[in-house]
Length: 156
Image (cartoon, rainbow, N blue to C red; front, side):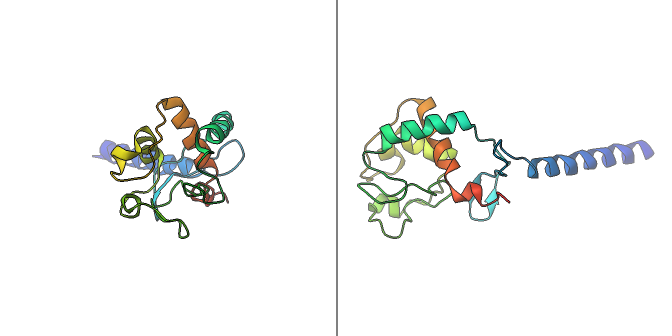
């Protein structure tokens, strides 16, 4: 019985210490990173690769910059803080009905699925551009994540 108690105690210590280590995770810039999936919910911390962010910024300008801007609505809505935001919720942008009614939070997975085929993801959307290369999608998503207050809200 004493042996079982010791095993349970050790297991509890490991669980508690791993959650403390995860909470204290920081990226190389010193910011704490938590991937926000919906308001108030989060998943374990992730590391943002600075090299991937730089690549993502270059790709964003080439692939997305024709229709989107970080801070101004253009043909498409502005993208700063898109990561962790509910789809179709930029107040001063006129979304298609498909996006207004889409109940999705923009995360790694949802952004990736969206960029693969927006018209399949949200039938009736006006965005037809597809980003076929997984490495390009990943880099752009990392860039958008880096710029998001959803990931920087935990910076202190």
